[in-house]
Length: 218
Length: 328
Ligand code: SF4
Ligand code: SF4
Image (cartoon, rainbow over all chains, first blue to last red; front, side, top):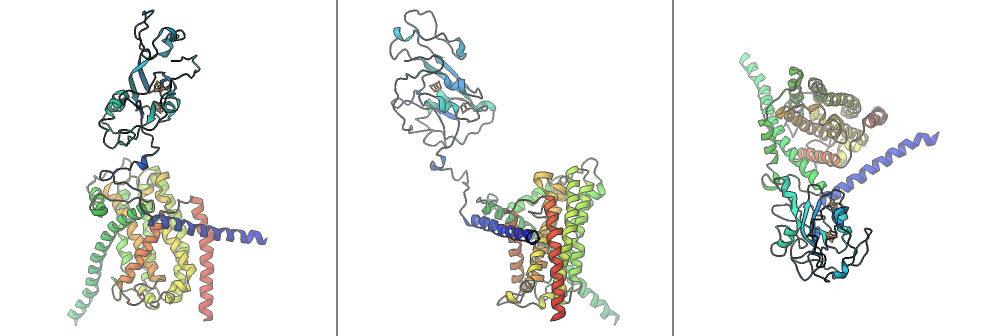
């Protein structure tokens, strides 16, 4: 009997104590410095942008800031759950057969098997080249799968957080054109990852990994 | 003789008119000040600056808000009861002046010298419930009606412990005259009623938060459940009047609380109106602090707290007060 009588009272007193604890927490927060960045007058520092996930952007080669590291493997386009990456890839003309013209491979299923190609092709000039890299940012969910899947680290999240546009089309980004713009004039507010210095990445190695598609070695 | 008698009536009358004018200014200025303060407190607790862009540190934000409210078109919703709908904000706001009249702000600084001051305040504070009820019913809106129903249940419940707590003080002071209640307290904190009646003070404080419908007891206007509760449908100054009345009532409960428990305008060193204002603002700041700390309680919790805890506690406290008064 006694326990049941005093239990609610003890509980209420504990509750009151927790109320005081709550007040102490908000009181302490009140005294701490603020976090707000007064935007037009201040901007977020680069340190605060570490790990920020902006829209994706292409990573240039170490020795050539105009060319992406991309090897046109199309995996990013395939894996994207929102279907918002569109690549145009130029295949080198085959010297021996020369029957097939350079092919638009948006539909990857139509690409002819590439198993016998390596033998009669020049080592480097025969590489596939990406000629257009479009991102429909209105659809992107920033899941990061494309960045993860890219075998040569040719994609990363940009630090561009000042993205605004008057139309839907303003968010249809041409990443290749953007890469060409990047080194000279980083867009206002874009951090170092968007502009100047590229990240330190492992030097590019010939890609030999076999993928599930029954892949290719260059 | 007749001329002299005629002159005597205008004396009190002039005092009343001057007091009303001063109170109108006081309520208006404080309404804006409190809105600004509330938003600043909210901001700082959440580690952001609050209003910042209109004027230096946003001090003109409340003016901008007021202008916006005044400028809005007054729309009556379809199917609303015109008389109740537009009567409600007026009924809510009008008694506010009456509530301030018997309060003694400083030595001799009061609008109405009545020995039933406390009763007057308690009686007319109840009118706000009627206003909320009218607003909820007159709006022809389900959220408004739900908000009004909650307001009635909550206010009726919390008026009981509030009265019981106040009664303990009135019994101790032996008067309902607010000036005399102040006069019976000393200048130092241990001479205030709060030192003798801490339980009554606690009950009064909780009830005052609940009576003014402030978080965590803001169920009548719970924005996440009822959009805005009883004032969902009100445009422009219709909403503005409710808003002003709510802030005015906050000032009233803190002023009455300061009078009853904290020695009114008496304070250490130099007595005066500044102590009263200081106590009111401290009280209001604590109310804001509480609002931005606690989540809203559920409706059964709010009534449980009142009926199962505050009312028995207040009754026991009152009984103990009477016993103590009889013994001493
Ligand atoms: S982040 Fe996700 S949704 Fe966005 S482009 Fe990459 S894979 Fe598609
Ligand atoms: S996954 Fe990487 S290498 Fe492959 S196409 Fe996409 S960006 Fe280019």
